[in-house]
Image (cartoon, rainbow, N blue to C red):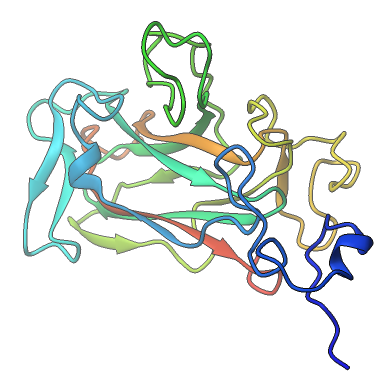
Length: 254
């Protein structure tokens, strides 16, 4: 005799009544974020490297260049300066998932150091000035909601100085790895949440040693910014060709 399909959360009495639509479907998403989360996200930088979609320094833009592996790059074309930056959104979900941030970039004699940082975004905030907040994501500026607070993971600064200009790739470990350890929508305030039940006493996953942050599953904004330069470099130039968030399994983490 066959046994009924029982989804988690379905009362046993209901399950015994036979098959129904709830038993044959995945559980619905909670607050718009699926239980099983998302997978690898390749960021389409041409869409985000402008002032209509993200926090971008004056003069920073996407340049089409088909000699570049990705077909172009984000840069400041004239007078590159310390502090030049751009940002983009991405979804990290579900709770406990392991994410690796990587990007491809250029190196050269007049390039600066690029620092990666992350901030959580408000989702469906009731403080939205007008209209329906459902499905809406807080903007990067302080139009409404709390101001974004960016945190930079350890080891997230890449020195882009090199004697000759060329394209470079990060190695297999990426720039940094994080685990959203908070509840759905919890804001990010700590990249190594010692108090998380999924972390050890130093705020890391005890199995993989990846940092467990207190931010929960939800929308985040990633910023790439020029932060100083190598003493040998003559400038603060940067070129970012691509950016990717890869969801890792336990074997690949760290």
